[in-house]
Each structure stands twice: as structure tokens, then as C-alpha cells.
Image 1 (cartoon, rainbow, N blue to C red):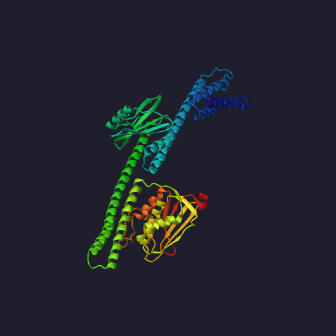
Image 2 (cartoon, helix red, strand yellow; image 1 turned 135 degrees about the vertical axis):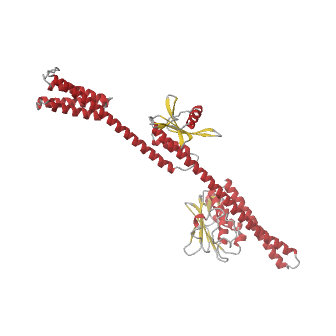
Image 3 (cartoon, rainbow, N blue to C red; image 1 turned 30 degrees about the vertical axis):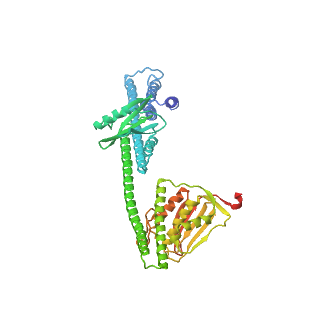
Length: 502
């Protein structure tokens, strides 16, 4: 209101200034010149202010025109009847021009508002394309709509066969939607699809009064199918815009459901692949040691083996039993990782003890292969779970033994720093193929070069990564410049000197 009064004062001041300039300074007596000047002021005022301000300005200009410029000057009496016609023509032109100017400004404002709504819809469409599926996806969609359209309340309501209505809300307002009203609105919108040309929207809109707030309900339609309802409150939005907004929201919901279905299909496919790989690997890795054990046991039953041959056959049986035990241990560890049942208990321990424990677990696989160990002094301790860490290192040692030539050494280096315990296991084999590096730690994955010549299930590196994750540790692999591969693990942990424990 203050701005309106300020504009009215400026308009009247402009009329007074023109009147004073023409009558007292320039002594203009031509009524046409004065009328056009007043009309110009009226047009400018009507273009920038409300209609009532333009009308008051028109009346003021008419009175000044009559009093100061139409004879007899100085009175509101008009001597010549033609001047009456001119006066009323001036007033009519001023009022019509004011109205037309206001109409044009209103149309321009409406066009600007529609362009703004189109821009908001475009921004929302971009946001929808970046959305990913998840438990909070529907709530995120409601927040995006509320933010893009400055709505204090937005609710996306989807009917569910098992749980009634799923409602995701966003905005500052807290309103409770009546489920019966939602059912009624959804049923009405699902029955028919007609376009209301006057409102520029499809039928099915409904307005509810909830706690003194007008809540607009709009059907979410995919083509002719109604999939849910959109509720908004706190700001009036054009019905056509609400329809378009409902369409964008419906497309977003369909996309989210499609992403979930695709993810489920991908998980099912991966599960089938994992099952096939597991069965194939277990079938091969179980059959080989069992065959060796059966042959060795049969040989021991014969009369031909001497003491030396019996010792060799017994060693074969023990080695294959150890291999079977290792395989079953891998299966149990993988099951624990999948179930999230890997528990950790941090203790002060020496890094060299972890390496020796890991070496003992895979002694049969390493055999007589030299293992060169570089570890911190015995008086340096690190606080972590020694069993879990040793089990992870054991898988790296086993992998190094399997993928490097017999007789070549395995280098193990342990250091302690700010990041915790770092252990590297380096072999002198052919290295890792570039195509295998991205999937090296995937379960049941075996590189092309390993297939057909190295036994194994492809679980070892995946188990190492899963065990280390329970300690917030990490593992990675890289090729060495002078040949071979290097695997590095880092486990966060405090360090101290042994005398500090006293």
C-alpha cells in the first residue's frame, strides 16, 4: 500500500508539473498540446502502476485541463460546447489507454509466470534424470518438487496393495492427509480422462481443507493410467502446471520402479552366475583332492609299496586333506562375510607374528618356496585384530604361491606409520593382466591366464578384501616395474613401543 501511495503522489506531481510549466512558464494555450501531454502522463502511470492510480491520475489531469486551459480559464465552467466533447473524449481515451496498458501488463506478467513455470518444470525434469533408486528415492522426489516450485507442502501418494497408501512428504508444513479422501480422489481420477479447455487441465483435480490449508490433489498419470496422487499446499499453482508437474512426477516414479526392477534382475543374474561359478569351482576343486586321496589310499592297501613309497602316499593324503580343509575354510569365511558376521577384537601384537601366523596357515601351498620377510623390530606393537589380519595375509601369500614359478621367492614387507599397519606381498610371476585388474577382487573371478592351469575357486582375494573391510582396512594390487605383482593391505591401528605397555 505504501508503494501505491508513493506512485500516486508521483503521478499527481507530474500532472502538477506539466500544468505549472505550460500555464505559468511557457504560457501554452493550445488545448491539443496540453491534452497530449496529460495523456502521455496517464499512459506512463498506467504502464507501471495499478488501475485505480491511473484512473485518479486521469481525473486529476482532466480537472487541470479544464481549470487551467479550457476557457473560461480559472473556472470549471466550459463556455464552448465543443470543449465539453474534447474534455470527455480526453477522459475516455485516458481511461481506455489505462485499461489497455493494464491488460497488456497483466498478460505480460502471466506470460512471464508461465515461462517461469516451464523453467521450473525443465529444472525438475533434469533433477529427475539424475535420481537413483533407493529407499529414500520417493522422499527425494517430493523434496525436489517442493524446492523447485517453492511449495511449503508436497506429498506423493502411491496406492499399495499390501500397505494401503505410501506417502512421502516434503516442505515446512505438517499436514495429515485423509486416506478415505485419497481413495475417493484416486477412484474418480481412474474412471475417466477428459480435458477441461477452460482450466487447461484434465479432470480429477480436487481441493481439500486440512487445518485451514487448501490442499490441491492432482492425479499422477502415465498416459491414461492413474498411478497415484500429488498433494500440494501453501502456494497457488495453475491447474495446467499442476497437471504437467503430475506428469513429470509420474514419469519419475516409473523410472524409479524400472531402475529397481533392473537392479533386481541384475542381482538375480549375478546370483545365477555366482552359483554356476561356485558349483563349477567346487566341483573341480573337490574332485581333484578326493581323487588323489582315493588313489593314495588304494596304493597304501597294496603290498608293493615299501616304506619310502608309503611315506610319499601318506604325504599326498595329508596334503590333499589340508587342501580340502582350506577349501571348506574359504567357504565358511565367505559365508561369514556375506552374513556380516566377521567380528574383530583388537589386541596389541607384533607385525612379525601376524606374518608368521599367515604363513603357517598356507604352509602346504607355499611348500619349500622361500619367503623373505622384512618387519619392524619385535619391540614395536600395533593394535588390531591379529587373527583377521593374518587370515587376509594368508590369502595373499597363497595367491602369490599359486601365480609365480616354483623356486622364486615371495617378499613380505611390513611397516607401521600414521595410516596403521601396511603389509605388502610381492611375487616374481608374470604379473596381472591389465584387463583383470578392475575385477581382481570380485568373488569367483579368475583371470584368463589362470584358467586351466592353476587350481582355485577365485574366492581368496575376495575373502581378503571382506575380512579387511571388517577392520576398516583396504587392499589393492599393482604390477611391479621389474616384473611380478605386488599386493598391499593397510589396516588402521595405533602403535607403541613394548616398554610403554608396562
